[in-house]
Length: 381
Image (cartoon, rainbow, N blue to C red; front, side, top):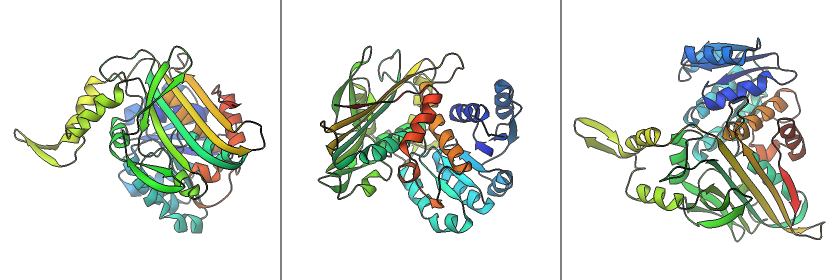
């Protein structure tokens, strides 16, 4: 199996690290517009399987040429490139996965279903943590019930040592963060699909020490196609992001003041948007390093073959200091790497465009995550 990974940043590094250590992988090309960064990553991992490539992903002709000769391509670049990379993968005739996270981009990818099927390739967007792993847990867990009444997905990447005022560090793209906070959350309410403003429906929840009481609120992108799949079958379904208490109110205030707006404004002699300014300020003010933790809880309630009616999946994963890979990198990149390898190895059948909840079986994914020391508990309550 031969893979090409677009992007040599944090997520790209974790993807290449996992692929290079996996049996059956013959080659991993890491493509980045920064030739030095791609070369540094290849050197750092010290694997003869890893080959750097200088490439601008906005040049589709070059992207298609770079894809040829590989089994599967994986996008670890900002989500705005994923629709074009999907088209390139179809043209090149190879499978494709990405980390996803933006509903509009995924819809654009889904419109390429017919072309992908005709070319005989499988395109799987939204393969990361949430959307991704959380969705597979929800869809797979539902199969253990005769009927499901509610599905709740709660996921958060947090610093182990929070620093005010937001008690948050950048564990992935700042643009992706603001996108999640400013969009619409797709949910099910009384069996019907609905869209609700992000950063609403605040709740508290408890995790084992030292985390204790935390907050969770609706954000966009996390449910992917779950609300479509379970419409008319599940009464309530939603996804909420976990943060330390107080984060939601502080961040939402700034968005309400217009800091997430994409309308052009004039600042002195410069023309920019409030969002662009806000993103730059966040990059400068929010820490981007330090040990982190990923917390995940997926709960399903309904009627099943067990005396209890609640099934809980839970994950608490921490920064791996031995290889300098954050918990967010592990829990986002490793599921994506596993799914890509399953596709390339013929363990996921089908052609066209499918999200993980449509095509990835739960138990094989959990088994592969266990191999990587990502332990997800299953408990009937």
